[in-house]
Length: 235
Image 1 (tube, one colour):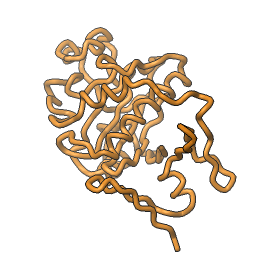
Image 2: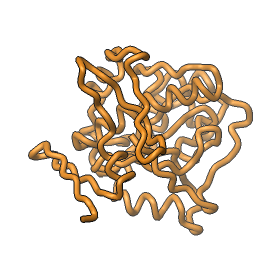
Image 3: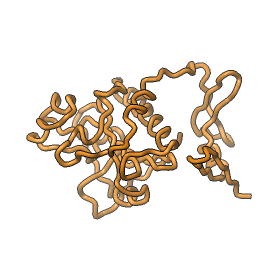
């Protein structure tokens, strides 16, 4: 999948002060992807940011680099004692922003589209792999290290990421072992430029449709109801 960089000079971030990310926190945007983009890049926003956002169409936007702290899960020392997540209480009095990676999901109640859910699962794994690459440490993708904002701040954010957020399905998907061996992974090239990786399974090569289409100047539309993908070329 492709990650679209959206952060700008106005996007808030801070140093991690040597802390290594060890937890992923899921959020709900309570608005559209467009409003999320606008808020996290606004000169008037001096209070919040996130590392990533996932749209209902499955598009992934990045606002803050992983080696920087986003302003998404900050707590006072007193509030840390009320956190439902053991990892927050155990790390007190350290600001949770210092050691967390935040994912916002477009929506209001936590219900994700099929494309959004697939993108979120992929993103959780991408974050794990990038943290391993950057710091040499792995974030376990389990219930203790993949949590909701309500577990960090149950007083101010008791419903984030929403009552319909698919926690059971997410944990099940994250625990599935990859069925594809490393030697079966292939690099996908379009007009001499790498656009990501695909894989070969049972003689069939699977490639990232959206990335290939965009590299060729086409657009991709996904219909969750009919489960169809439509590619529209410039011609």
